[in-house]
Image (cartoon, rainbow, N blue to C red; front, side, top):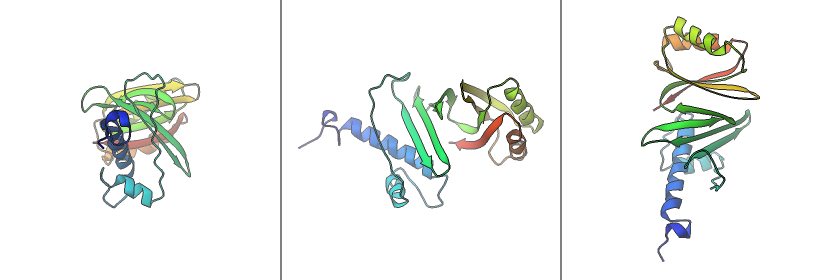
Length: 184
């Protein structure tokens, strides 16, 4: 008997969700592992390493028609990301650790968690500028616990200027965390 989208597992909608989840797992594991992780083997690689993948579908009202949510639990804490695609091939980050932010997922990103107080954006911009790192865009989100910033840079993660700027940014009193990610 053939399955349809209404049948659930095996239908077109189910297959689309399966591939999106596999792509998310690939994106998480590929930068961390030296072995080849692909969209085809990502679920098996995760299972071999004791990583549980939990998929769910929600009818809860959200700000976006389609959204993917990834929550990662490790021995050092939890990370929660949500994103969507506004137009073909233009993914956007919409939530970072519970804080709404809207940022393009492309290029080199400096991801910040900081206290929500005046001057932080200026300090980060000044440090980057001093080291010759240009800011392409800056997205900011905040809630009662603090702020998150996603800064798209005209630099590669291993550029000398960014390598020197990062410890200075992390040393700022208001900056709780600063990480660099390359999205391709």
